[in-house]
Length: 570
Ligand code: FES
Image (cartoon, rainbow, N blue to C red; front, top):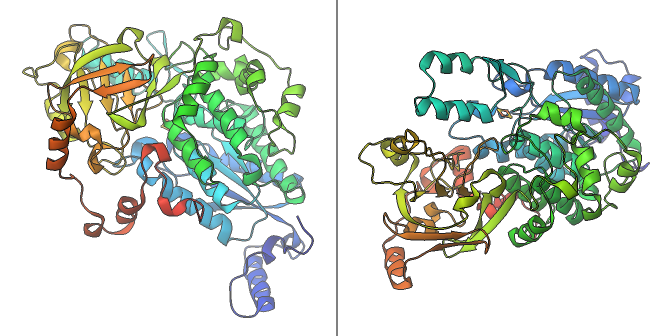
């Protein structure tokens, strides 16, 4: 840190028109918390703590926080924790994504407004890590991410269970009548039994892997289980590293670069990661003016094999991934595809890290490039007249027999329409049809929920149909699977072509050609376009954050960030 920059408590003074008075007043009020004058001379590491009673994944943060503080003290800094809002995935309505940008604003502004020289970001559950990375990128103070770590698995009737792929699998069995009410009640109590984030390569785990790959987190810490002693040691080491960053400041803008974002995309593809991560990485990169192109994603996807055998696509859980070598092992495998000169929060480059890292690797969980789980990446973007700005398909979680297919559209105009009719015995639907959900994008009333995993209509699921082509402007949980086309942009609520689809229209998808086409002639589409009226409450009829969201939120291909939060001047 430069010598003329005030440090610690003297940073960012409250404005009373007399800086010396501001320092004196601040020190005296800080002294009221029991700090000695000697301690108050130390540089400060802020700790953004997203603990909440509404966030089961962060249940262990009090213990983790103590370890971070210990590390900061050992590193010669003064640790000061501050709360930010938290986003417990299943406790938020209408959906946690709506509040990701609120948490990002909270994180950014509290980093900027309070006197700290570096910051540790404690997050984990789904939207919390992207929110913290977005906020930290914009604040651009030296920052280091610490994640909650994944949950451990549990058991039901001798079978291993882990949130939340198994949540969906067993719910599907219950809907199909394969298990009874007593069994689903028993499973409900066993799906999530420890602290930590969902136990599979869902969004939280994918974002942890991305944060480590970007270089914003200590090496080897993404996959350590939440309840493992190594997680506490990682927290202590993170605190020490943050204290070191005071003297060797490395800012997010030096770590999150075009090259490190491309590395993160490679890893996202290689781990068969969550579709949500594309939105989040786009938003994080966008804070620093870096564009994530879906066309580039397709190029990378062609060259990057899927290496991990983890649910929701494969067999294993995150705790297995940790013991198999974690993200370090994946990075070593795809080393020739990576930009090795990217700086990380430790001051080393990614190449330095990989040179030093000769750790373990379990081939049951992490394959070699020559013996990959899939020869191509897990995600692919589709374009066409139905999605001019792109749509995402997680091909690694989809049924390949549905990749080149034409089908009849069965349209649901909203989530309410979907839940009212999907199980109607009179619904005109066959397994060859395409289920289409409209008005579930970022500007819709539902706020882009994880509803893209449309349930298979009961009349078909009870006959054993497990997958169908499903298309929407919604998202899908990172723990879900199926032939599901998501994030269609522009969305239906703003008049995107998805809004023009009618029951009985023909749609063609071709994963090989990266295409999604609505097979309706242009004159008819134009007539429908003219008749379109948006089904959203206009911003001026809303208030508070809801209004800000409606005015500002961008489309999926822009990361659903707020327009005003992108860098000034674009
Ligand atoms: Fe927190 Fe899944 S509910 S990561």
